Length: 168
Image (tube, rainbow, N blue to C red; front, top):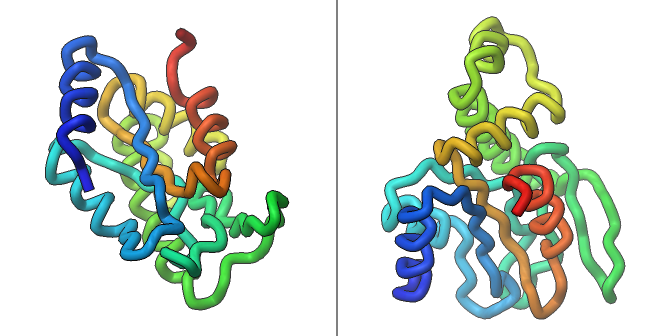
């Protein structure tokens, strides 16, 4: 969950009106709970968070992440990444997170909202464009998960920082 040092950094980012990303780490540890951590961030800061990846397993069973934008499972084993189909038991959860993402992204851009309300599917490029707009305006806070010690989810976090945050 959210700790005191997180709150201090968040207040600092608020004072400078900086966009931000959230990374929920230590998914490989015992008692890791992604849903609880996301809920904790929402409650603590009153922001609209959108998970861009969700864990495959937790604790010792943590084996990878699901990319919600591209709907692919990324499994990590011995330092190698393999892209696979989403496991059946996680498909409905991933689809729910993708629907939530698309709704929040569409709300951040009028043209995307119009397209969404007309029932058209948003492409990955449109989702990324709306996401960047939402992050830069402070309407959206993307959430990522992984394990920094196992190097799971780190490259996805860095790629998202390049795609969604302003140039330093």
